[in-house]
Length: 407
Image 1 (tube, rainbow, N blue to C red):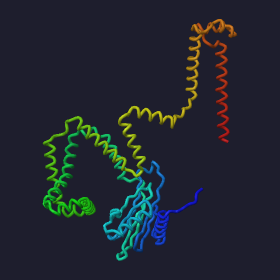
Image 2 (image 1 turned 90 degrees about the horizontal axis):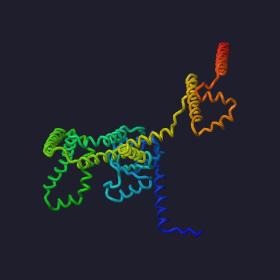
Image 3 (image 1 turned 45 degrees about the horizontal axis):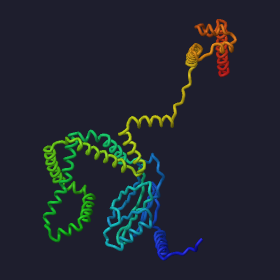
Image 4 (image 1 turned 60 degrees about the horizontal axis):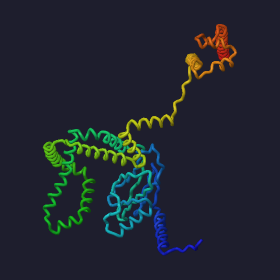
């Protein structure tokens, strides 16, 4: 064994790691939450709320956890990560750079988190503001929206062949896409107003940042915009829908078979994506996608394999025969065995002389082969007497048991 020689980089990493942990623990700002827990904060600065991953079971397919932030504050920053040091690192980088929150999550007060992964959410409140808030965690065993997304994906996958050849679906999709692309056309016309000067180049250079910022603003304030400008939005949607319908009517529904197949594959792929992202348990959702694909392409083989697997896992329990069924089956099997014995003795495979030498009464055996009953009249009489005696004994025993129960 060689002597351990720590490097400078290793020592620096250890120091930084211990400093980070000491900073978190010293400030008492780290909290591990479970469903039903809630923590109130009364101090400024960074507070970290974590949740440890749980085991994955099939019954937890649509399980979700929600972190709820109860506060009237607007001046706070959110940071997410897999561990507390990662959250602290993002916070430190944000504090050393511009105040624009590059690493933070969106400022949502309802945060859906994955229950099957370790996750931490950091909340930073400046000292100069009111920094009182409460963080709580709730568990949803079956998230209705995720369940609806799974069902919708399955329906879309199986209905894709019909939808790709349906005229009504063609017009609805065309109008929807027309309304969406009209916004892009509107942005293109607005960009023409700026010309090709320095302003235009500046917008192109920072286009993705401004687009992301505008999209977040519109999404967060969408309800207010819809309420204040609902008349304008309604007329705009009606006008673009009418134009889209006219264009779709002029072009007409799709008639090419290959184009219909492409539309069908696109819809089926969209359905599989909906199923996959409908659950945090991605292994189970992927298994559902595979099962659906197999059932769609090989329905008979999949059904037969599933039936064989089900019988091997859950075999049927044999049903006990009643007394009458037992007697009938005995008579039937006896007649069948006697018939097979007659056929064998009459066939060339049987040596009659060897068989006769082994029998006590060859004459009676020969009569049986020729069609006589296998029982003599005396044997039939003795069998009936013995059977009657057994039945009487059973009835007598049952009567005694009933008398003892009465006492």
